Image (cartoon, rainbow, N blue to C red; front, side):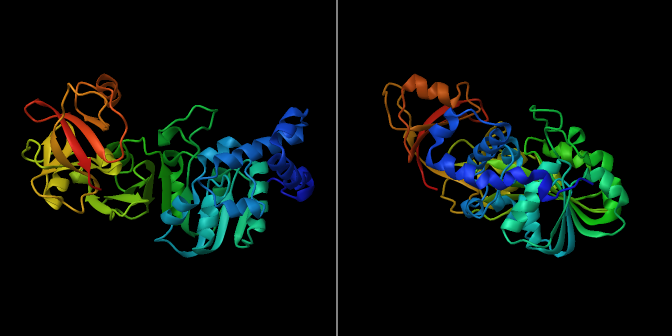
Length: 388
């Protein structure tokens, strides 16, 4: 275990002065010949700017320090961290991939004791310093490789949280869980012996069926979490007992209620399709990823336009559709240029950018040109009005 005493990292005590000087005169600071320590401080300040949408600004005012831009990029936002642990609480939680400590901070609100593990000793020191600056006293910081530390862990935790490093060998990002560190496929059997639940974070780029196949018996649920119509992360809950897996879609930053699916609903098409009616619907990005097409038609009383056109339609307006709703105003006039229209293209020969360029459309918040093909391969260009 690395020594995290202040004497080993005393130069960080000077950071607040550097930060203040940078805020007051960044050009002056940049123009000076910076020492190695000051270069570290500069990287930390630049990381702070990258993390501004993830970490409450008041934390920085209280002394929170980011080590580098890569750490800021990889860390969870506090909003996401708080959400992912809503359903959990207990005596002991272990964060196996501590990083900046955002997830550990969220865990500290739900568990009496949290163990933060991080193999980068300097990052672990900063996390310890940050926890203290925020007045958090129930997080134990351990600067050690989590896989090695877990071999000696004799207790039993309520929750093991794992956010594997997707860049273990450099700047190139990987998505496969097998290649991340620590590797869930390599360590899962050991984790399950030492934790009641394993909550695993994964890239939203991973295919749903790939995750289902990777954990055929231990997976309780898959939760695809988005924020403001952008997929942010997969959350996988695993446990020792045999599970019947279900899938959740969570829409943070919207007023859309979460949806729970069965694994056998993924990718299933409805039995029939319908040409566009008075209203058209674009599913939320979570549902485009999960593709529960038949379930959407059945639950929201809409029809899909075509197998490969992921748009839905109805004669009457649907107020609670999980996505954007549009009213069809009529056919698009190809001869009229410079119309005020945003462009959406779904299963159409031309992409949205190409259509916008061809017809010289001007971006508009309310009106849209929607281009697509129906089940008979007929091409449509429709003028629509955004309803919600």
